Image (cartoon, rainbow, N blue to C red; front, top):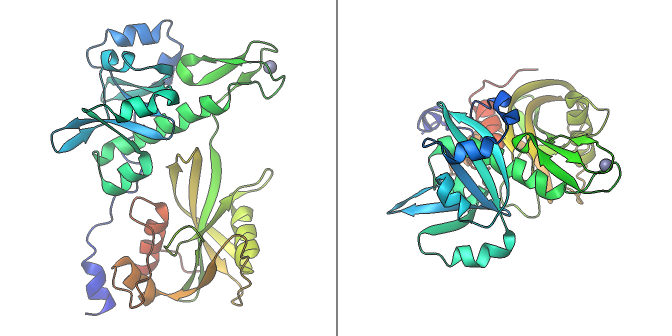
Length: 316
Ligand SMILES: [Zn+2]
């Protein structure tokens, strides 16, 4: 079977995880006084519960649901609540559960406590929940990590239904942050540059945090040079993906590689090398002769690589 025939068997592009199905954030409602008391009486309101890194799922026969009624949520040892937005007009909230209760929750019969990555990869809930769960996880985790004022060190308290923290000492306001990460595929003719980390078996795009005072384009060029010793010229944007581990935003890009000789930074990567389009196609099709793998469809790297083999990536 030719590469073109094999690629046709891939079918339509899978959903990019944590993106589709996001809520109407309904930001004006965040300032409503006594919002959570009103939502507790709202029959359409439902919410997610997270305990540290893990999501609570209700076991419903053979399937799982991540949504609970306000009454069910209030029976948990809740540490903080946030308003996520509206799903087709129905309010959605999320609560953080005291991590000290993790073992007790695990022992319950009707629920399962499991990390979001596994939920996404195993498809344990409807894909439309992933964007809401990503919003919930990133926002709840931000509160856990920002209890104290970065300005004066005093305690801060939650405000605006979870979208702000206020300092009790100096009055500073703190807003939830998201950390930009560029993830890029450097292209040189009909080949692309992939790296492999020590902790992950898959070959993937290079990636790194955007640094203060840096554009996305400069971050792409710097990371490829630092990690693989390759100089890049033009950079083009592909698409982005929230990555709530703990609170990143992946900015997918393609880059024009201006050089070929690799100098791999082994503190960052186990290995890096050039791959042909046919070889990446075999990896996407799970038929690579050496069993080499690419990241799963939930990750933006998979979509970047698919654009490369389907020749929808830019030609520099
Ligand atoms: Zn302060």
